Image (cartoon, rainbow, N blue to C red; front, top):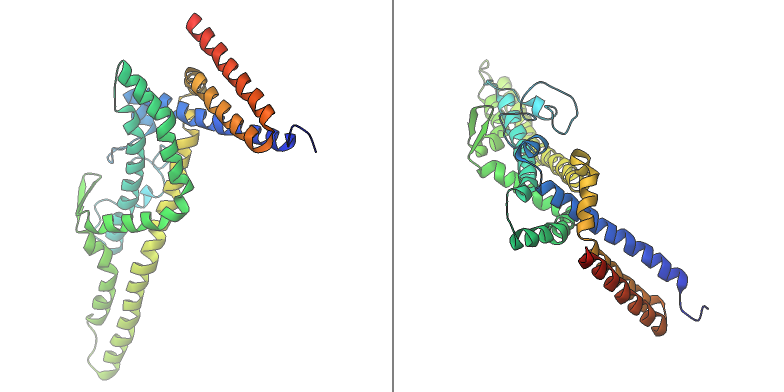
Length: 302
């Protein structure tokens, strides 16, 4: 037994603290850097105009900003029953991703100066990442709620605008599969008891297929949308610097190096209390205070 305490446990905990502080700095720096991009860059990276790419255009395969699946399933100008329902589902998907992109665009929509800008950058650097990461951590529990919200919105939104065409009455599209029974049962056929039984038999299966579509296929589609939306959300949260450069993130992390150091020192002191004796913890506290003093001193000298 080491007289100082559990050195191995302390070192491991310090390594975890370094990862936590780096993660905080990386996430905060990413959001602050994103908020400082100009409008043209934001429009390219986070498009929300349903009349432009990636919602319309020439098919370009699997891409984050190009026209591709599932928007290629949309067929404008068609009066076919199945096509209308598919268009309604595609519009639902488009609106979900527009919502996510609008959330991240909102970080650059506020322009402050002076002390307000400092306060807003502090919010983006520390508070916003915590809230956004919480959504990822709780995503498994929130998925069902998101699916219900998408279904609710699809039914009650009333009117969508997509490719310069309006689609109304979400309830009609939602309950449309039940019309299979009506179409099958009232279709023209030869008179007779055999044909009547055949109509009832086929109508029963058409009704079951309608229920299958409403209670299984629709939720499966919306579940897929939620899954892909959460992946896209995580991508924006963690890998968005791929678009505007990691150097900007590093620069923002440098601007907050003192506060990040204070967080690291606080975590390290907490770790020492759990793994080391009181005397060692006291030494770490004194060393931490002295290190912060030196950094502040050098900062104000400049």
